Image (cartoon, rainbow, N blue to C red; front, side):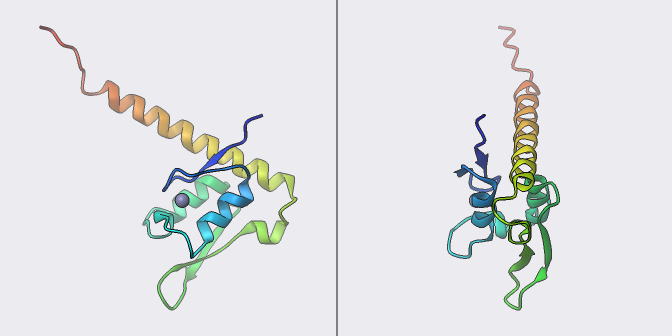
Length: 110
Ligand SMILES: [Zn+2]
């Protein structure tokens, strides 16, 4: 099974849910997922609620709790849940894109 996970913000692909969550949490990388107003929603969608934000740090960055840290990286349930949520997210995005492409009614009646 191809279990690639993609970050909703920067579209980087990850081989595991843990890697994706660590990416979302990393302060070192330039990814807009942490600056996005939709951050929490995106994380919820990716993780199916496994990860929750927990207010903000003093520097106003969003503080969040990675369930991976609680469940442990080897937790199969966590990986599966995140993978499922990620697939659901991108399936939805793909459908949205298809509808947007349909909408302009590109019927050249020339
Ligand atoms: Zn990212």
